[in-house]
Every structure is written in structure tokens, then in C-alpha cells.
Length: 437
Image 1 (tube, one colour):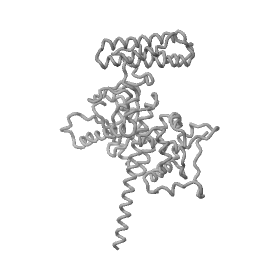
Image 2 (cartoon, helix red, strand yellow):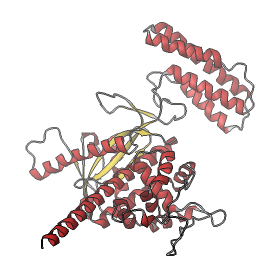
Image 3 (cartoon, rainbow, N blue to C red):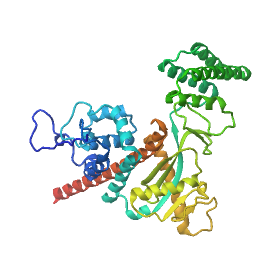
Image 4 (cartoon, rainbow, N blue to C red):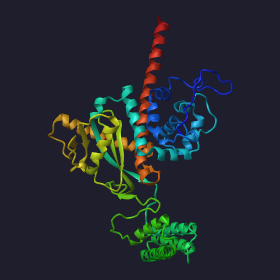
């Protein structure tokens, strides 16, 4: 059933405390809550609910919790717990009275994100852009010139080694077989654990021949379990079929193989090299970021499957930015990784290594491209872009969008903070003038 709406009444409740009596109405979050078009979310997400059944949680509450989660780098559990302690967060969520209990179970946030999908996450990002334009902090003209770059959104997986992959895949297969009621000849639980520990100890001691021998043993254990399950499993068991297929991929892959598996629970993870001296390889997915060249707002954020060439991602990144801003993008500035992009409807400036001799106007936009680097850095250090903890390929796409929402939301919050300081200073100056008069 569609979400119920919080009813605000003018009648005093003598039991509960009204939020307006606890908060400062000039607070940035209060002012920001008045600027956001909350009705747009009800209109966008209303079609995803059934007409009958128990009423769903209010859309405004779920949107506000997700904004706060990615703004302050919190888990689902932490953001719900802090919501109870913070009256400004409750006011942002559309509450009239202060509440002393958690509004939802934290797991509801996961289910809600799956319900709205990638398009719903893009709506959250779009409303931060619209709010910035309506408040005057982002000019529509600034959206015509953008900077574009890619980064790696690392997944929450351990560094992959062959021995660990073999042992972990064997554990997953044994667990799935037990759940399906298949009796195995041997699970290798005890000897597999010992072999993995010896393999790691031999590697630490640089006894590589012994290490390779234990790795081979772990691979043998996985092959035996795989063949045993394959002989005994039902033909129509889709779950076991997928796990057997994954196990065969792990058994067949070599050092120079393509489309390798680096994680058992996240098989879509790619090994991406971005030329960093401190971190040669990162395991995750590539993400494209589009920012306004002047005022540094994120206008687009897109997660890509596989490891595409940067130039091949430019068309999709610009398409998403046009969709969210509903404005034409006339110029995009990129680094050398975007050569051979194939974009024809937008002027693309590729920043060369040698910038001398070019026109001053061109050099100005080349220099402005560097502004996207600290934006990506803030997204990674403050808005959950560094380590993606959402599962599956769907999580790869939605995390980068909501990370951009957190960046823009915090930028809006800081803009209203500056407005509040200006109001206080003007009020103090007026008071001082009146006193001396």
C-alpha cells in the first residue's frame, strides 16, 4: 500500500513535545527542509506501491534517512539510532513531535533502496541539483560547462589469493549442499583449514615451493567437492548450478586469464589499475563523475560494469547529467584518458601535458578541470565512495549516485550555514547601531 503521510495539527499535544519548541528555526537543516520539493518524491515513487495492504513508511522519512546516511558516512543502523537523538533530523524527516523510539527497522532502508532502484536514486540526486538552483547557489549557466573524470569504487572484499578463493568456494559449496540435503563423501572442513593456514605461513616465510604445494591441495579439495555435488544435485536446482559454474571458473582461471573471479560473494568485481604509486590495483568497479566547472556541484554520477575505457564512458556520463539537470551541456573538460571518446554533440576539451602557447580562455578551463579531483577525494573520505558495502552489481550503481547526493546535500548545508552566519552578523550590527543611536 502507498505510504501514509504525517498529519500536522495546530492543536497542542500535552504529552509529546513539539519540535518547533526545541529547535532554532534558523538552523540550516530547518531552512533546507523548507527548500526541498518533497512532493516530487511521492509522485516519483508512488507507482511502486500496491493499492492494498499495510501502509508503507513515509517517503519523506526514507529519503531524509538516506540523505543523512551518505552525508555523514553512517551505516543504516547508525543513522536510525542518531535520528532518535537529533530533533533537527526528525524535523527534516517531516515529524511534528519529538520521538523517542526508532522510526523503522534499519533493514527497511535496504528494502526501500531496492524498491526505488537506480532511477529512484537518480531522483534523489536530481532534487539536490534542483534545490541548489532554486536557492541561487548553483546557476543554470554553470551547468553548461562541466568537468568529467572516472575513479574506482572499491568493493568490500579481501585481497584475492588463489588459496583463499579455493577454500572459500569450497566452504560455500559445502554449505549449499547441506542446505539442499546432499550428503557429500567428504567436506574437507578440517584439512582445508589446516592447508590454508600452512599455505599462509609458508608464504610469510618465503618458502614458495611449499606454499605452492598447499595451494594445489586446496585446489584439489575444491575440485573433488565440485564433482561430488555435480553428480548428486537435482537438475532443476538453479542456485547450486550457479555456484558450480562459479567454482569451475575459479578452477579454470590462470594468472593471465581474462574475466577472472576475485571474490566468491562478489564475482562481478574487476581488478582496475589507475596508475597510482601507493595502490597499483583496486578491486571494485569504475565510476564516472560529472561536476560543474565553476561552482563544483556534482551533476552526474554513474557506475559502470566491467572495466571500460574512460573515453567510452563519456557519452553515458553526459547523457545522465543532461537528464538530471534538464539543461544542455555545451562543454566537457577531461584528461588524456578520454582520447577517442566519440562524442559529437558536446565540445570536449582534452587537457594536454604541455599547456603553453594556448589561448588564455582555453587554459582557464584546463586548469579548472583539476577541481574535480578534490571532489572525488571528499566523496571517498566523507561520503562512502571509498568502500562500497552494498551488495551486487545493483549496489555498484546505486552507491556512487547516493554518494553524490551526500556531497551535494552537505554543500547545501554549508551554504545555509553561511547564510545563517550572515543573518546573525547583520542582526548584531543592527543591534549595535540601535544601541549607540
